[in-house]
Image (cartoon, rainbow, N blue to C red):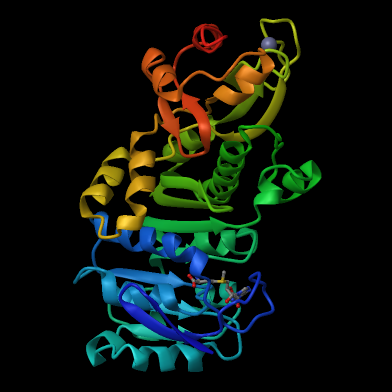
Amino acid sequence: MELVEENSVKIKVEIPKKDVHAKMEVFYNPLMKSNRNISVLLLNSVDNKKMNLALPLAGSGIRGLRFLQELEKGKINHLFLNDKKDNFVKMFNENLKLNKISKAKENSISVFNQEASLFLLNLTEEQNIKDFCGYFDYIDLDPFGSPNPFLSVTLARITRKGIIAITATDTAALTGTYPKVTKRKYWARSMRNDLMHEIGLRILIRKVQLHGVQFDKALVPILSYHKDHYFRVYFVSNKGKENSDEVIKEHQYLLSCPKCLSFKISNYNQENCSCGWKYDYAGPLWTGKLFDQKLLQAMLKNNPFPEEEKFLQLLNDEMDTPFFYDLHALSKKYKTDPPKMELALKKLKGTRTHFSLTGLKTEKSLKEVLKVVLSSKK
Ligand SMILES: C[S@@+](CC[C@H](N)C(=O)[O-])C[C@H]1O[C@@H](n2cnc3c(N)ncnc32)[C@H](O)[C@@H]1O
Ligand SMILES: [Zn+2]
């Protein structure tokens, strides 16, 4: 056991010596600090107040403790924490004491030791918690690997306008290391190339949305990203058949030409590229927006975490259109040197993308991009 400090809180936990794995006792993963920072910042940057928050896979409980200490006054109505590990309740209560959480705050916490889906389903108004009727305004799914086992229940238990936060660490499954796995777990076709992280994120988004639309819940991403070998998406849940149909309209294919490297979005997956080659395809996947620009701006304005500044700025500056040109891949294909990023950005009215250091998002055609790439030939 070790004492660790993360921002405003300290906890006594087991620190992984090497890799994190599911068999460990309740543990603390320092690599996910950024994931937690951003969740605190996001909740402090949306208008929602008096929220009922659920952490069904709470792990060490550190995120919950940080919510208690760092969310602005009036944000939390009640915080529900759960983890199936045997020692979870004992450990969490000890960590509550360690952080000298006030009695008033303590009264707004309930701690459970159940299977996550049962935890979400078992909670009803009979709990006699003030202003809680069995539905949550925020549910944070932070599993090892895939969120799949918990999606249906999460969708059934989210309130109108509620926020669902989802982490997926099974990046191999989403980026198509084994295409059959992507198909089975995420109901889509992956593609292994420079675009695979954006493809994986958009495949994940669609999969979660499919769970929503069956209950007429339209899940709209407000912040979605890939970072340090995991995917993270925050959705707002909107009610209604029309809204759900709008979401489904944005489930399309990415067509990518292996010969000339052009790409496009299409409702069909069998098409030929204008160069004559047959397009390869990925999807169906979400082709809509990844970010709510206003939210990102509010987050940048409120941001108390210097270590997240660069990343948030990158997201904020990123053109929110599906997919990008990888300048290195293009230069390799067309046997030239990669152009200077700054110059290419200017000439193509493009932006960088957080998905790749050498990626450029632009609305220009491949032909125009190639002009810039080829002009760097020595
Ligand atoms: C990645 S950790 C959570 C980390 C935590 N959210 C944080 O920020 O520190 C995943 C946790 O899910 C718990 N877990 C896995 N499957 C579960 C299930 N079916 N029901 C409840 N808890 C589960 C594990 O015990 C583990 O503590
Ligand atoms: Zn082509």
